[in-house]
Image 1 (cartoon, rainbow, N blue to C red):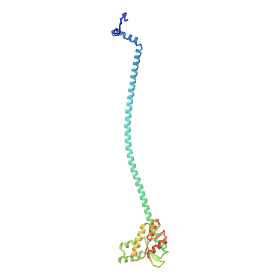
Image 2 (cartoon, helix red, strand yellow):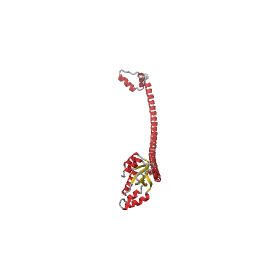
Image 3 (spheres, helix red, strand yellow):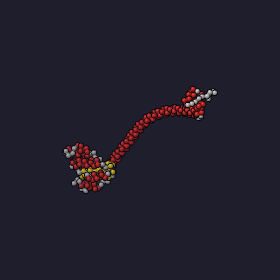
Image 4 (spheres, helix red, strand yellow):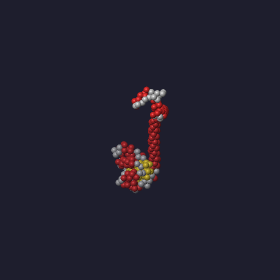
Length: 270
């Protein structure tokens, strides 16, 4: 019924026609058929509002996140710049360390060279000092085996010059003989024969000392003179002793003549 009027409904088509021609009946029909629909619509509307609010907050969060990401990218860029600067400083530090290492190595090398040079200089000074002592104390060193021992530097000069004139030795060989540290001579106590000792004096005996004294003794022998090679030293290595004994060289150990080496060298003259 609507405003005192009755509506005849004989089938579903009549109902649809009435609903279409009387829109005011729709709300009543909807309320009658679906009483919870308004509530549901309200809930849907509320849900949509909450969804919209959530979306708004999400967009705000995204904006904030985007802002933070932008700031982070700026900080990362700054960090990369600082890392680049740090790498440059590290490279510079490496260069400085390399230079410092080079300086330290050069310093050690120079110090080692200085020490070696100093050792060499000290060795030369010790050798010269010992050489001087051997010359000064030769009478005592060789007095057990030679009578009237003395320095032959002056009197040998005439003999060697005559040997050079006679073609027995060369001018260079003459000079080699006088390069010896000491030319000491006298008469053998055993048979009164004249004997010349060609002495090489060093703090540490070397194979080169042995070679020089042998070569100079042989020059004197070429000139017709009896000569023995002698090496005088404070320090001896076993290998050098072995070489000297094998070459029939007289050993003087810190101003003391080794008797066995003397006898062996003397026997080689016969």
